[in-house]
Amino acid sequence: MHVRPAAQAIRQAAAIGRRLAERWGKAPRALDLLTALSALALMSLDVPGLAAADNSLTGPMAALVLTAGAASLLVRRRVPWVTYGVALFLLGWLHELTLTQFALYSLGRYRGRRAGMLGVVGYVAFAYAMFLLPGWPPHRGETLSEFLSLVVPIGVLAAGVGVAANRQDLVRELEAQRAETDTLHAVQQERARIARDVHDFVGRELTLLSVRSQVLARRASGGPFEEGFEELSETARSAHRMLNEIIVQRGLDGAPTPGLDALPELAERSGRAGSPVELLVAPAAHRLSPLRQAAVHRVVQECLTNAAKHAPGERVTVRVDVEGGRLGIAVRNALPASAPASAPV
Image: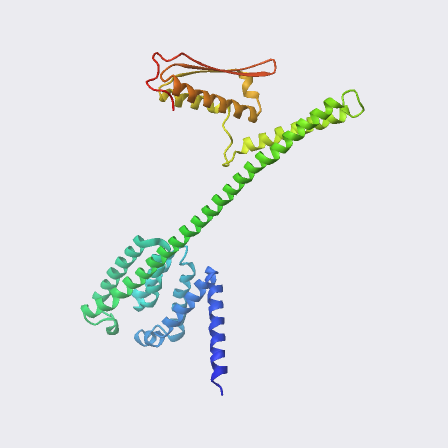
């Protein structure tokens, strides 16, 4: 009759325990506090023995000392070497091994494999020195073989578990960074696609609007609506120009579209390919809008490609001038010394 309620209560208790563990796992300070309380509970089992072995260490005094030692686990993430030093102090004074396990785990977890190995070596050497001194308790290993079989595995296992946890933390961090990078890349691609769509479709509609308004303004010439149609045409042209400049400035891949500042690099690449370039750019050309500078860059790039294809090795002269509100691009090269061996593909 009571089997089902008992099983349900066990399941509810397990679910509550899982929720508490997840909540505490997300709070590092709470997890450190829980770790310190767990270490104190394990070390408290030795309080009667410690008080009996050392008459100057009473039961309350022993509990106070162990509490102070367990409290060092609260800083194990930032300064695990402090916890390690406190653990070695308790090992030398009270022959307490419990806190050492937590300290070695913290070293491996929060400082990596090298720190874990150094911690294990230092712990084994210190414990062996204490073993050689008189007063080492028999239950910690009366002979050297018993001592090594007890002390060494404790340190190696604790540090090894800590190093493994450190590796898992690194893997999780790398996976999180990879997921973030993939998300940013997807967002960048989506923005590029939207920019292309806006440039293609909205730009086309603005162009049609500008042309139609110009036609209407021409048809309404001398009429009462001529000024309104001209203003509409100018607004459409201005909107189309602003749209193109925004797309050019931001680029499709997040970087601005190259303009006149990229022409020297373009000429240098052409020279390395075997076609030296003489570049002459008027100072007034640098005051052009980003949209027009991008157009100049594309034109010069295409011309240099054609020159390298049809007149390889010949010198190319590139001139960009601005005169009377007009932009002029002149690209000249000499004819090749000999005809091409075969017709171009």
